[in-house]
Image (cartoon, rainbow over the protein chains, first blue to last red):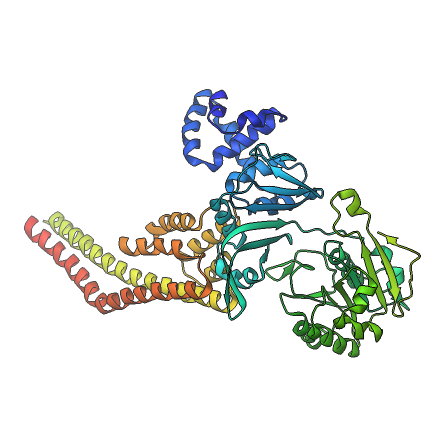
Length: 391
Length: 173
């Protein structure tokens, strides 16, 4: 067995803190990804009479699981796959993996910034980080785009690609512009894998406030970035679509312009948005609202991040046609939103009967992130909850 | 004497069969060149109309393509879809080599077909379509030349086969 192990890199480091079984599986899977080494080692393994056992284990270990970990591992460069597969303790707690050419591979794990060591272990220090190379980025782009860069031109223009599982890959490099608009991104040197984050049930506590006479009210969720408004809206859509204790399930339409709500992959939502939900993926909100209204007859329409006058106009039109709206907007407080010219008239007209202001954005630690609350107001800006409603 | 006649018939028969086989191969080659052309037209459609990814396009096209290219497309699509860390060019080359024995294409044609894999995937849509157009243009030329010669060459092979058998028979008798 020593013959098999001795020529491989990282083995000494791997030995630290690993069981023999884990080391063996890692080494064997390395063999399988390097046929030229395998051939040589196979001959030697035959001498010991253990070839069959070794190959069985190697085949088993190289199979990528179909879970959340597998979805991410599949798009990683081959040289990192096994290291991260065994190095990251729980992919459920991994939030981001950041690849910057020439810089160490970084991760955000449980809300904390970490570096990835050559053994795939997450470390707080920068002693021995694994450097990201151009080749790694090139290889990853091949996998992310399913070997078809041309098929993701629009996504590249927008700066991200969604992969199975709803995980989003942010791209950055040199932007090529034409007529003032971004045409494409060349020399992509930065990738950010943001793992999708669903929190089923997080909107349940809000339901008694959002429903009236068995019908959901027009609701606007306001928060600064990273406070969880999209996550909350996603769960709200699911609950409204499937039905809940306060109202029956209704046909729900989602205009997912940035692909953050449904995280569609080849048109199929990767996040659970409920059984009665139709998703218009990648479509501008204003156009999408009108299209859904005409084609899918939704009782409720949901959109993320209202931002332009066209969006507001299309929404007003849909509301006047009898649709209920669930929407989000960027903002720090109710006052801030009311002062914005874009929202001012709409808010004063009382288009939204429920307004939720979220608390908990930009927190670094996981403990703080869990402590999220919302202040709910009615259309007349009267507080409905006594203080924050924690969820 | 009877044995001599039996031998003569066998010689003429086998060389004639060889001639007919060679002629048939030519027809098969033409049919396969056309199948590749059809496959590329469909790939162009998938790319330009639905902007489908290559594994997706290959899977769609496979159902409408004759063997052995169906098998080729299904295998390439499956291997790419699995995202096992393989390189498109390499997968393409390996699968072309795998089916080459099942085709009647010439060595040059196989090499060109093999080289196509290295030009797929990394370009933008316009360039990708232009490249396929260029490849199709060269392929069309091959088809045109073969179509012009096929009937003549096919007859030639058949006559040569039978005549070679007669010659051998005469020499041996």
